[in-house]
Amino acid sequence: MEYSRFGWSAFTMDGVARKAGVGKAALYRRWPDKASLLLDALEARSAIISTISVTGDLLADLTSLGAALLEHFLDPYGWATLRAAVDAASDTPSVAGFHDRLVATHREAATDLFERYVVAGDLSSVVSADVMAEQFFGAVLMHVLALPPEERARVRAASRHVAGPIVDLFLAGARTR
Amino acid sequence: MEYSRFGWSAFTMDGVARKAGVGKAALYRRWPDKASLLLDALEARSAIISTISVTGDLLADLTSLGAALLEHFLDPYGWATLRAAVDAASDTPSVAGFHDRLVATHREAATDLFERYVVAGDLSSVVSADVMAEQFFGAVLMHVLALPPEERARVRAASRHVAGPIVDLFLAGARTR
Image (cartoon, rainbow over all chains, first blue to last red; front, side, top):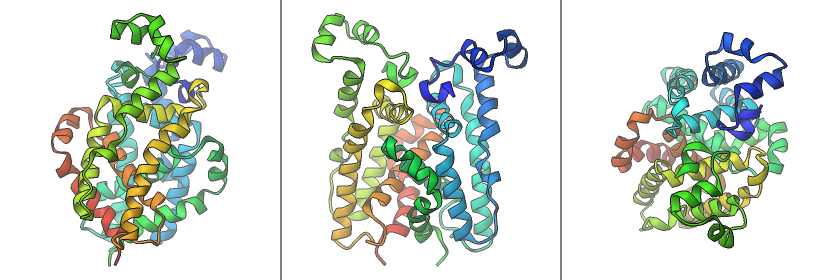
């Protein structure tokens, strides 16, 4: 995905049309501009939380979520979502409207999941579910950001194993005592 | 800073020369290409940990670090560092070499700080200092990424206050019991 590798300025309707083997007119009939095309493409692939099976076992579910998030950030679409979030918060004029849609997609699902465990008494209610969700997602993201490029494939293949210590540290703080 | 707003493709030696009011030849005498110019500019502003005063009081120090990181990510140079990390991990050909230098700058200082507290017995030695540093930095980064653009100024002005819950949740898990 071009946007994922080269960013906003290099991402064009022309380029998408060429890659997809369709005419530009066809693209413009469906999407008024490249921002809406990109958002639709990203949203279609970004519903991470809906891809994990929530069993009610906190450790198992967070390990699944951590592994799914690692794979997401290591995938061109997930990476593109991160790049779009960076662009959206950068005053890049044409993507200013991205922020609400991108964050909402992730935040609502994440906060819902964490809140379910607070209600069940498994996660502490001392810190808000928002702060918990940000810390968990952030820990995974930072692990991917700090990864040497040559280790990306290894982590993707061993995502549950790599998620282990991240989940352990998170739960040490967030679990009810 | 142009790179911070518009990214790699839009960042050019021409643009930098124009903004700085110097000739392109002068830039090229000092930096062989735009990648080295950008890295030098980012490194000069990225030594966050060296800007906080380490008192030995874990809660106080992490609050200072959290506040400094929030301000860093909300500043054009800090933001540009994040963008460079995204570009560096994106196979964008010309910035492939970035990764080591960017990550090293941050990781070494962060891991050193966290390890100092492990040695002092304040932070648990169950999880590695790397995982702790990534979780702490990641939690702050994700908070900034999820922030609606209109709230950036408020958070920057109240960075210690905003860092509070992030530090609390982190310490609940990472502190020695």
